[in-house]
Length: 300
Image 1 (cartoon, rainbow, N blue to C red):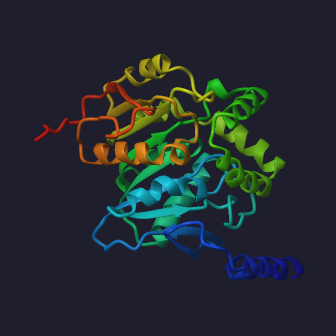
Image 2 (cartoon, rainbow, N blue to C red):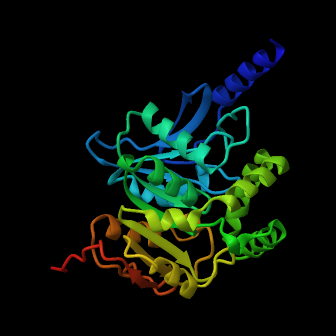
């Protein structure tokens, strides 16, 4: 009884404590399978295409907002904190990748969303792969930004070193956004989630994809193998992957290069040729692989 009372008190404080809005998107709460879920949502017309952004390891959806907000004028946008992350509540047991995929779909159910395009960063990419594997009818397109969790990130001490190196390559403001999320997530959850992430069959799921998929990599991302290795992986099957490299970007591209990433996503969603954002010279784009599925629209 005491634990239930404490839980209700936490929920009340989390929902009612005034905060300065971190986004131009509406900040909202819902309850999914008994867990309080915090999310952000745009106010587009109901018939807009739906786009849902899924965050990375130990983080909330807050650092995804720079890109999500730029796309919110065209897409009905959702940016949830998955259960156990950010301001959302926790379930009883630690969640693995399939659990998080199920939680993401249950969130969409709760919001009345039948189909959506999914944009993920880091851990959010394996979650998207699992959603597409288990619930293929729910996903229109996938955008995998800096996918993480493979052999290149093992063992944990190597991943920690990669994260530390990446921290020095991200904008300083990213530290102020990420640190509270990491502290809230906690050390025990970090070890459990890392194990689940590295055990997930990301490559197998990627090669099984049957939907148009954009993969965006940064040339300064220490958590990923080189583009040549990723191109080799992508070309193992005649799948639907479009592989693009963003010159000068590290891991958190959604935060560090929102204008360039939003530009790429718009082109991909409309099947247009991949080009660099006009007027930029420091973040050039290189298309290094295109599967057979993607048509290339002719330019007027």
